[in-house]
Amino acid sequence: MSSNQSFETAIRAPYWRETVADAPRCKPLAADVACDLAIIGGGFTGLWTALKARERWPDARIVLLEADTCGNAASGRNGGFCAPSISHGVGNAVARWPKEAETLVRLGRENLDGLEADLSAWSIDGGFERSGKLTLAATPWQADGLKAMRDSYARFGVASTLLEGDALKEHLDTPKYAAGLFEPNYALVNPAKLVAGLRRACIEAGVALHEGSPVTGIARDGAHVRLSLAAGSVTAKQAVMATNAAVSLIRRFRTAILPIFDYSLMTEPLSDDQLGAIGWRGRYGVVDSGNQFHYSRKTDDNRILWAGFDAIYHFGSKRDAALLHRPETYARLAATFAEAFPALSGVRFTHAWGGIIDTSARTTFFAGTAFGGTVAYALGFTGQGVSATRFAALAMLDMLEGRKTERSELRMLRSFAVPFPPEPLRSLAVARAQRDLALEDRTGRRSLFLRGLDRLGIGFAS
Ligand SMILES: Cc1cc2nc3c(=O)[nH]c(=O)nc-3n(C[C@H](O)[C@H](O)[C@H](O)COP(=O)(O)OP(=O)(O)OC[C@H]3O[C@@H](n4cnc5c(N)ncnc54)[C@H](O)[C@@H]3O)c2cc1C
Image (tube, rainbow, N blue to C red; front, side, top):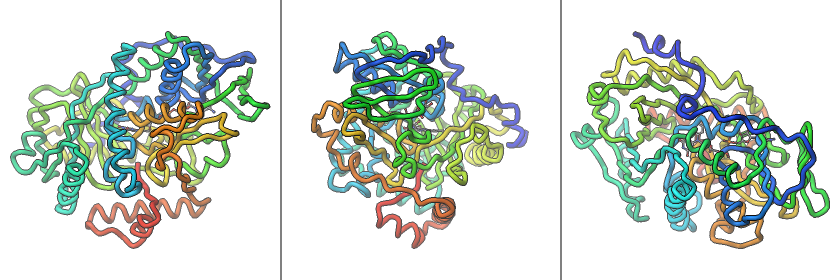
């Protein structure tokens, strides 16, 4: 079978959905209601905010409004890499927030521990497994990058082991990669199970959850916030915007986020012999270290997720649902899978899907308050939000309480969200950055344009 044929019959929907039982949809909001806290968006950010708000304020009236169904967007479509980081990695913390890098690394680690503890406290089966991550290098300069990464990790007390030759083959046997860095303290989750578990816990904790309830407007109403919907409204003492890559209800955030499409393929379940042929013995996640990178992992039934690489921006920040499928990218992914794992030729892909990443120019999320401190927001997770969304939820609740905490005062959260330029400059800048990043992957040379952006603390990542 050619790599193109291998995905043609794939179901065009996230595989993860099949791993959870169908739950009845929560009723749309169809009345005017009042509450203490209104949350807009039912992905990880909104659901964590509702749950952690319930822990803090046992008697509060909490309403969560989700435009579609919880987890229909990024939270149900991701790779499930659950990082011990809130800053898109140690390297990004050091490059962009050197003065608070140590704090960011520690808070990232504590957040992962806190997330695991919360899952246990709320009896949530999120498929959480702390099985580690293997980062691979395909070229000599990427191998040097892994050594630098190991040294940087060591400075912050992050355990890692460099793997070359036979030591790498014992973790993954592939002709494409020459070196790897293994981090034991890294987790994976099943995204759909995590959404379903958080959603169930919220409902059981008395959060009024409404699906099929897009909020169309947000405005101050005296000391309160008023949210408008097609068939009702919410008047809340405070509100949280957890809308990620959607067009923001608050105009000034519309230029702070780029919707970047990212795609995934999932194989059929593999036998022990097939997995043995590629030497993938443990359950750790695997990523490669190019600017254009793949991420890959096993499922409970030993399928392999193969995703990433192409990060697609559409002129005018288009977000049409039709763009969630891209046969050219599926073909490309099938071809790179064949290159990485020639021993798996003939393996079929059963699922293919895309999702939208909310890329911010600092490649980490930002958070703060608007409307005189009554509305908190956290946006811009840029491809690493599975764990960071929980931290963002806690930081937003600190801000709404008016408490200055280590979390709420982080410069990473508070500093200006650099806007992307208007079209057509935006498309031109993205195309230029992507071309130069691909060139760097091929040659190891970073262009003047990218170095200029580095100096301004601006990045492009997925
Ligand atoms: C393909 C893909 C792979 C990824 N892989 C990883 C990974 O492996 N590891 C990792 O850490 N991160 C990953 N990410 C990123 C991660 O999934 C996100 O950062 C995270 O899920 C963001 O959660 P969220 O709740 O903020 O956003 P979302 O899950 O996008 O939820 C926002 C919700 O708000 C709702 N909404 C929007 N506007 C309104 C409105 N006006 N009214 C009501 N509701 C509204 C939407 O319907 C949506 O459900 C990936 C993302 C994608 C797309």
